[in-house]
Amino acid sequence: MRISLWPATLTLGAEYDDGLRQALARVLVEAGAVRLRHRWIVVGSQEIESWTYRVGRRRLKIEAETYRGLSIRGSRPLVERLAAAVQSISRVV
Image (cartoon, rainbow, N blue to C red; front, side, top):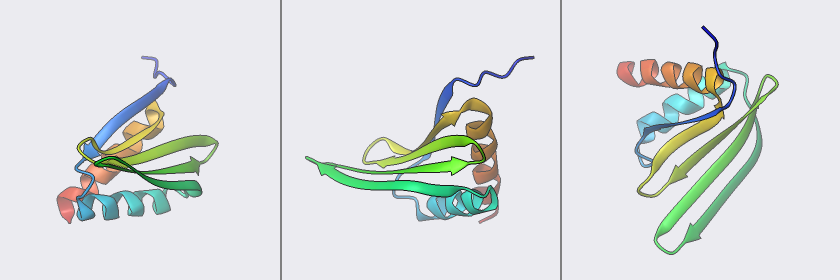
């Protein structure tokens, strides 16, 4: 089986879920992620917050957007691994 390295985007849940944000922050620390950029903008009724991280040699983008949720985008294997780790922490918390 081949794993695609093309970018994947997964929505983890609601953008306002503090427990989910804490779980994601913990997973990023454990993965050794280095934050490269942070942006926060408001467009009409939409609030968009985005972060860019480097995890190993790969880049990862995280977005929290009103009505769209908290999502992660990057290489498919990285996104799937991080999402699974967030999900397992979220179940415990």
